[in-house]
Image (cartoon, rainbow, N blue to C red):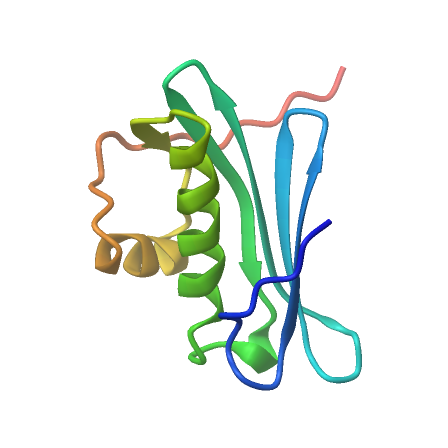
Length: 112
């Protein structure tokens, strides 16, 4: 587990690899999770997942920080392509970071 010195002021962060998955967590001064995300690198592709910023911590650069941290880790592992599924709300963040919409995904649920 590592701590990043570039975390936004008033927050602490941890970056932890559990198996092949890298987890980034940002916590506020009380220890509550403010933002998080994870990724796994498969060959040359990094799959980003579960990027979230708590509603009370939005518009403070935490999502950008999480994505930048994940991107740095992915590049260090040899990834040259990033893949993620985005909500409409999250897509705005990803587009400001240079991500491009490639296809529309359908949300499907199967309950046997």
